[in-house]
Length: 377
Image (cartoon, rainbow, N blue to C red; front, side):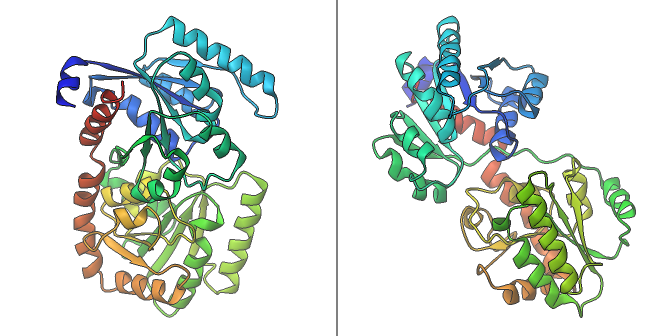
């Protein structure tokens, strides 16, 4: 590999993604663009099917962003049209390889990359068993390399691409910018005293993120004074709004409606983390990786989650605790331990930034990504 890296000074990479959503994958793509100077040997460009928050943020970083046109799988002509557009871009520009993100992008655009005789890399960010129609569609196009965001994801997804080289690569995650003054400002805004312990969860309003388990555990802490819980996350789709209504009802019936605050969508997550004392997201379904756990560790928050999925690779005894899934009693016991006294909480808070740095330091992970892609180009 060393000899190859000497021959390839720059690796020109085209990242292909749908672009109509914004979550962990999109956060990664923006990080690759925003911090590209940390690895100047790797030149990223981006091709998207949809315009939105992702395309806007990428354009703001100054990287090349190409629009492929909207694709609807149920309308075959949109697929052919977008593939023709990609074919034109591949003919007009010189890239060393193409990275498709998730099964959908690989299924739609992987065949066109193959026809252009360029190496194609598929980056698996989510958990799939290979049984869905889009996974089966994606598996029809061989990949020269599979990148997995965790060993857990690799263990679940790798059976779909048995012949491909594969690598596990944790995301580069940059520390969220927050000021010490944010702690007092956010607490004043939300009516929380300086000596109150704040438990924070930041996640989409989906059942597998563990809100119900979290509420059931908090209900067992009613006898304990001096804590509140903030749950941040928007509810735009109908099922998300119905889920949120159910959570609010559940909290009221448990007698903690006045101590559990649903904050909705927040664009100031760094400030929320600066104002909180504990990060708790007790998943009832496994996270493929869990960028938010890394962000919480960078903010110096001890992380409490359940022992499943990517959290098992992030949280250890130096920075948090993992509890058995579906057991509110054990979760409540550990939350009680961290609320008062705070000595255990402070000890774990010190270990968080070190753990995040060891796993997801941007300079280190971008250099590793370059090595992996250079060996494929």
